[in-house]
Length: 304
Image 1 (cartoon, rainbow, N blue to C red):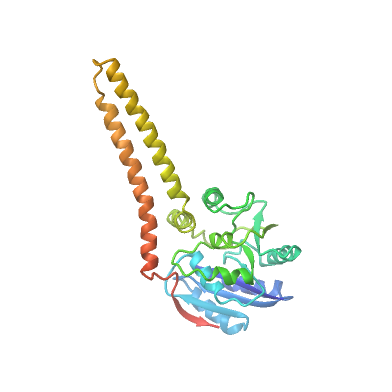
Image 2: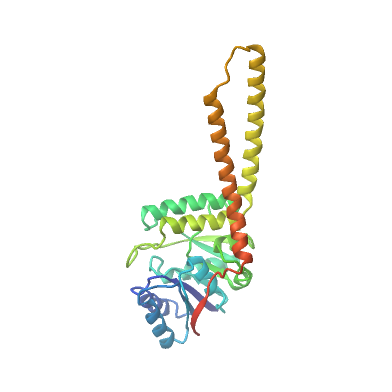
Protein backbone atom coordinates (compact mmCIF):
# COMPACT_ATOMS: atom_id res chain seq x y z
CA UNK A 1 0.00 0.00 0.00
CA UNK A 2 1.23 3.47 -0.88
CA UNK A 3 0.87 6.02 1.90
CA UNK A 4 1.08 9.75 1.20
CA UNK A 5 1.71 12.24 3.99
CA UNK A 6 0.85 15.89 3.48
CA UNK A 7 2.66 18.38 5.74
CA UNK A 8 1.85 22.11 5.66
CA UNK A 9 4.87 24.03 6.95
CA UNK A 10 4.83 27.49 8.49
CA UNK A 11 7.94 28.54 10.42
CA UNK A 12 8.86 24.88 10.84
CA UNK A 13 12.62 25.10 10.32
CA UNK A 14 13.36 23.57 13.73
CA UNK A 15 11.10 20.55 13.36
CA UNK A 16 10.47 19.61 9.73
CA UNK A 17 13.72 17.68 9.17
CA UNK A 18 13.27 15.64 12.36
CA UNK A 19 9.65 14.98 11.39
CA UNK A 20 10.59 13.61 7.96
CA UNK A 21 13.30 11.39 9.46
CA UNK A 22 10.82 10.10 12.04
CA UNK A 23 8.30 9.35 9.28
CA UNK A 24 10.96 7.46 7.34
CA UNK A 25 11.99 5.40 10.37
CA UNK A 26 8.51 4.65 11.74
CA UNK A 27 6.61 4.04 8.50
CA UNK A 28 9.17 2.09 6.46
CA UNK A 29 6.72 -0.79 6.03
CA UNK A 30 4.76 1.35 3.57
CA UNK A 31 5.62 2.73 0.17
CA UNK A 32 6.04 6.31 1.32
CA UNK A 33 5.37 9.66 -0.30
CA UNK A 34 5.82 12.88 1.67
CA UNK A 35 4.38 16.13 0.32
CA UNK A 36 5.75 19.24 2.05
CA UNK A 37 4.05 22.58 1.37
CA UNK A 38 5.83 25.67 2.64
CA UNK A 39 3.14 28.25 3.35
CA UNK A 40 5.25 31.38 3.00
CA UNK A 41 7.60 30.79 5.96
CA UNK A 42 10.15 33.55 6.58
CA UNK A 43 12.64 31.38 8.46
CA UNK A 44 14.97 28.71 7.04
CA UNK A 45 12.12 26.31 6.23
CA UNK A 46 12.59 26.73 2.47
CA UNK A 47 16.28 25.84 2.52
CA UNK A 48 15.75 22.82 4.79
CA UNK A 49 12.82 21.52 2.74
CA UNK A 50 14.81 21.81 -0.50
CA UNK A 51 17.62 19.76 1.08
CA UNK A 52 15.08 17.12 2.18
CA UNK A 53 13.61 16.87 -1.33
CA UNK A 54 17.09 16.48 -2.82
CA UNK A 55 18.16 13.95 -0.21
CA UNK A 56 15.10 11.69 -0.17
CA UNK A 57 13.42 10.44 -3.34
CA UNK A 58 10.08 10.01 -1.55
CA UNK A 59 9.89 13.71 -0.58
CA UNK A 60 8.12 16.24 -2.79
CA UNK A 61 8.40 19.91 -1.92
CA UNK A 62 6.13 22.77 -2.99
CA UNK A 63 6.87 26.36 -2.01
CA UNK A 64 4.05 28.93 -2.06
CA UNK A 65 4.67 32.58 -2.89
CA UNK A 66 3.15 33.88 0.35
CA UNK A 67 1.23 32.76 3.41
CA UNK A 68 -2.20 31.64 2.21
CA UNK A 69 -3.27 29.75 5.34
CA UNK A 70 -3.09 26.16 6.54
CA UNK A 71 -6.18 24.90 4.71
CA UNK A 72 -5.04 26.45 1.43
CA UNK A 73 -1.61 24.85 1.84
CA UNK A 74 -3.18 21.46 2.59
CA UNK A 75 -5.45 21.72 -0.46
CA UNK A 76 -2.38 22.52 -2.55
CA UNK A 77 -0.55 19.48 -1.19
CA UNK A 78 -3.52 17.18 -1.79
CA UNK A 79 -3.27 17.99 -5.48
CA UNK A 80 0.14 16.27 -5.62
CA UNK A 81 -0.55 13.06 -3.68
CA UNK A 82 -0.66 9.65 -5.38
CA UNK A 83 -0.99 7.26 -2.42
CA UNK A 84 -3.91 4.96 -1.60
CA UNK A 85 -4.38 6.87 1.66
CA UNK A 86 -3.29 10.38 2.59
CA UNK A 87 -2.39 11.42 6.14
CA UNK A 88 -2.45 15.14 6.97
CA UNK A 89 -0.12 16.04 9.82
CA UNK A 90 1.18 19.34 11.22
CA UNK A 91 4.88 20.18 11.34
CA UNK A 92 4.98 20.81 15.12
CA UNK A 93 5.49 17.16 16.20
CA UNK A 94 2.43 17.19 18.48
CA UNK A 95 1.19 14.18 16.51
CA UNK A 96 3.89 11.48 16.48
CA UNK A 97 4.17 9.96 12.97
CA UNK A 98 3.88 6.45 14.44
CA UNK A 99 0.24 7.26 15.28
CA UNK A 100 -0.54 7.28 11.55
CA UNK A 101 -0.38 3.48 11.73
CA UNK A 102 -3.39 3.53 14.07
CA UNK A 103 -5.36 5.67 11.61
CA UNK A 104 -4.53 3.32 8.73
CA UNK A 105 -5.59 0.30 10.80
CA UNK A 106 -8.90 1.95 11.65
CA UNK A 107 -9.53 2.90 8.01
CA UNK A 108 -9.07 -0.71 6.92
CA UNK A 109 -11.47 -2.06 9.56
CA UNK A 110 -14.57 -1.03 7.64
CA UNK A 111 -13.17 0.68 4.53
CA UNK A 112 -13.72 4.16 5.96
CA UNK A 113 -13.28 7.19 3.71
CA UNK A 114 -11.85 9.34 6.51
CA UNK A 115 -10.44 8.65 9.96
CA UNK A 116 -10.10 11.60 12.32
CA UNK A 117 -7.79 11.53 15.30
CA UNK A 118 -9.11 12.23 18.77
CA UNK A 119 -7.20 12.76 22.01
CA UNK A 120 -7.63 11.77 25.63
CA UNK A 121 -5.84 14.98 26.56
CA UNK A 122 -4.87 17.78 24.20
CA UNK A 123 -1.56 19.55 24.78
CA UNK A 124 -2.53 22.76 23.02
CA UNK A 125 -2.57 26.14 24.74
CA UNK A 126 -5.87 26.79 26.56
CA UNK A 127 -6.76 29.50 24.02
CA UNK A 128 -6.35 27.05 21.13
CA UNK A 129 -8.44 24.45 22.99
CA UNK A 130 -11.16 27.04 23.60
CA UNK A 131 -11.14 27.94 19.92
CA UNK A 132 -11.38 24.26 18.97
CA UNK A 133 -14.43 23.77 21.19
CA UNK A 134 -16.14 26.78 19.67
CA UNK A 135 -15.22 25.56 16.19
CA UNK A 136 -16.69 22.17 17.05
CA UNK A 137 -20.00 23.70 18.15
CA UNK A 138 -20.23 25.90 15.06
CA UNK A 139 -19.40 22.99 12.72
CA UNK A 140 -22.07 20.82 14.34
CA UNK A 141 -24.67 23.48 13.55
CA UNK A 142 -23.48 24.70 10.15
CA UNK A 143 -22.07 21.54 8.57
CA UNK A 144 -24.27 18.87 10.19
CA UNK A 145 -21.15 17.34 11.72
CA UNK A 146 -21.83 13.91 13.26
CA UNK A 147 -22.24 14.02 17.01
CA UNK A 148 -19.04 13.21 18.88
CA UNK A 149 -16.77 13.81 15.87
CA UNK A 150 -13.81 16.06 16.66
CA UNK A 151 -12.54 17.85 13.55
CA UNK A 152 -8.83 17.37 14.10
CA UNK A 153 -6.22 18.58 11.63
CA UNK A 154 -4.52 15.17 12.01
CA UNK A 155 -6.50 12.76 9.85
CA UNK A 156 -6.34 10.06 7.18
CA UNK A 157 -8.25 10.34 3.89
CA UNK A 158 -8.81 7.78 1.16
CA UNK A 159 -7.45 8.77 -2.26
CA UNK A 160 -10.88 8.61 -3.96
CA UNK A 161 -12.13 11.21 -1.52
CA UNK A 162 -9.06 13.38 -2.04
CA UNK A 163 -9.86 13.45 -5.76
CA UNK A 164 -13.27 14.93 -4.90
CA UNK A 165 -11.86 17.46 -2.43
CA UNK A 166 -9.29 18.93 -4.85
CA UNK A 167 -12.07 19.79 -7.30
CA UNK A 168 -12.73 22.81 -5.12
CA UNK A 169 -11.17 25.81 -6.90
CA UNK A 170 -12.32 28.67 -4.66
CA UNK A 171 -9.97 30.91 -2.66
CA UNK A 172 -11.42 30.04 0.77
CA UNK A 173 -11.14 26.28 1.38
CA UNK A 174 -12.10 24.62 4.63
CA UNK A 175 -10.89 21.02 4.44
CA UNK A 176 -13.32 19.58 6.98
CA UNK A 177 -16.22 21.32 5.24
CA UNK A 178 -15.13 19.82 1.92
CA UNK A 179 -14.94 16.38 3.54
CA UNK A 180 -18.34 16.57 5.22
CA UNK A 181 -20.13 17.59 2.05
CA UNK A 182 -18.96 14.54 0.10
CA UNK A 183 -19.02 11.68 2.64
CA UNK A 184 -20.43 10.49 5.95
CA UNK A 185 -18.37 7.28 6.02
CA UNK A 186 -16.18 8.66 8.81
CA UNK A 187 -14.52 7.10 11.85
CA UNK A 188 -12.38 8.33 14.74
CA UNK A 189 -9.35 6.85 16.48
CA UNK A 190 -7.81 7.85 19.78
CA UNK A 191 -4.13 8.75 19.38
CA UNK A 192 -1.35 10.31 21.41
CA UNK A 193 -0.97 14.08 21.54
CA UNK A 194 2.42 15.49 22.57
CA UNK A 195 3.74 18.87 23.61
CA UNK A 196 5.09 21.21 20.96
CA UNK A 197 8.81 20.71 20.43
CA UNK A 198 9.43 24.27 19.33
CA UNK A 199 7.74 27.67 19.25
CA UNK A 200 4.09 28.50 19.76
CA UNK A 201 0.90 27.88 17.81
CA UNK A 202 0.56 30.03 14.70
CA UNK A 203 -3.20 30.24 15.14
CA UNK A 204 -3.84 33.79 16.30
CA UNK A 205 -7.27 35.19 17.15
CA UNK A 206 -7.52 36.83 13.72
CA UNK A 207 -6.70 33.55 11.95
CA UNK A 208 -9.28 31.66 14.00
CA UNK A 209 -11.92 34.27 13.20
CA UNK A 210 -11.00 34.07 9.50
CA UNK A 211 -11.36 30.27 9.63
CA UNK A 212 -14.79 30.53 11.30
CA UNK A 213 -15.94 33.05 8.70
CA UNK A 214 -14.83 30.66 5.95
CA UNK A 215 -16.99 27.99 7.55
CA UNK A 216 -19.91 30.38 8.01
CA UNK A 217 -19.97 31.87 4.55
CA UNK A 218 -18.54 29.26 2.18
CA UNK A 219 -20.11 26.06 3.40
CA UNK A 220 -23.56 26.95 4.73
CA UNK A 221 -26.50 29.28 4.10
CA UNK A 222 -27.86 28.78 7.61
CA UNK A 223 -26.73 32.25 8.80
CA UNK A 224 -28.96 33.78 6.12
CA UNK A 225 -31.84 31.57 7.20
CA UNK A 226 -31.34 32.57 10.82
CA UNK A 227 -31.33 36.22 9.78
CA UNK A 228 -34.65 35.65 8.00
CA UNK A 229 -36.18 33.94 11.03
CA UNK A 230 -34.99 36.66 13.41
CA UNK A 231 -36.37 39.32 11.06
CA UNK A 232 -39.77 37.59 11.02
CA UNK A 233 -39.79 37.25 14.82
CA UNK A 234 -38.84 40.91 15.37
CA UNK A 235 -41.47 42.03 12.86
CA UNK A 236 -44.13 39.96 14.63
CA UNK A 237 -43.31 41.34 18.07
CA UNK A 238 -43.04 44.88 16.67
CA UNK A 239 -46.52 44.51 15.17
CA UNK A 240 -47.90 43.15 18.42
CA UNK A 241 -46.23 45.94 20.42
CA UNK A 242 -47.55 48.58 18.01
CA UNK A 243 -51.05 47.14 18.27
CA UNK A 244 -50.80 47.15 22.08
CA UNK A 245 -49.57 50.75 22.19
CA UNK A 246 -52.33 51.90 19.81
CA UNK A 247 -54.96 50.14 21.91
CA UNK A 248 -53.49 51.62 25.10
CA UNK A 249 -53.63 55.10 23.56
CA UNK A 250 -57.31 54.63 22.63
CA UNK A 251 -58.24 53.41 26.11
CA UNK A 252 -56.08 55.98 27.91
CA UNK A 253 -55.70 59.04 25.62
CA UNK A 254 -53.91 61.00 28.35
CA UNK A 255 -50.85 58.71 28.22
CA UNK A 256 -47.83 60.46 26.67
CA UNK A 257 -45.89 58.64 23.96
CA UNK A 258 -42.51 57.56 25.36
CA UNK A 259 -39.46 59.14 23.73
CA UNK A 260 -37.07 56.65 25.42
CA UNK A 261 -38.89 53.54 24.16
CA UNK A 262 -38.93 55.02 20.65
CA UNK A 263 -35.18 55.69 20.60
CA UNK A 264 -34.38 52.26 22.08
CA UNK A 265 -36.54 50.58 19.44
CA UNK A 266 -34.90 52.52 16.61
CA UNK A 267 -31.36 51.76 17.84
CA UNK A 268 -32.17 48.08 18.39
CA UNK A 269 -33.67 47.59 14.94
CA UNK A 270 -30.86 49.60 13.32
CA UNK A 271 -28.28 47.35 15.01
CA UNK A 272 -30.07 44.22 13.83
CA UNK A 273 -30.20 45.57 10.28
CA UNK A 274 -26.48 46.37 10.29
CA UNK A 275 -25.65 42.86 11.52
CA UNK A 276 -27.72 41.30 8.75
CA UNK A 277 -26.21 43.64 6.16
CA UNK A 278 -22.79 42.55 7.42
CA UNK A 279 -23.69 38.87 6.95
CA UNK A 280 -25.02 39.53 3.46
CA UNK A 281 -21.91 41.62 2.73
CA UNK A 282 -19.66 38.70 3.72
CA UNK A 283 -21.48 36.41 1.28
CA UNK A 284 -21.35 38.98 -1.53
CA UNK A 285 -17.70 39.82 -0.81
CA UNK A 286 -16.64 36.18 -0.91
CA UNK A 287 -18.57 35.69 -4.16
CA UNK A 288 -16.93 38.78 -5.64
CA UNK A 289 -13.43 37.60 -4.74
CA UNK A 290 -14.22 34.13 -6.09
CA UNK A 291 -15.63 35.45 -9.37
CA UNK A 292 -12.71 37.88 -9.63
CA UNK A 293 -10.32 34.94 -9.82
CA UNK A 294 -8.68 35.31 -6.41
CA UNK A 295 -6.30 32.32 -6.13
CA UNK A 296 -6.43 29.94 -3.19
CA UNK A 297 -2.66 29.53 -3.48
CA UNK A 298 0.16 30.34 -5.89
CA UNK A 299 3.04 27.90 -6.31
CA UNK A 300 6.49 29.47 -6.41
CA UNK A 301 8.73 26.38 -6.78
CA UNK A 302 8.31 22.62 -7.07
CA UNK A 303 10.81 19.90 -6.20
CA UNK A 304 9.16 16.66 -7.31
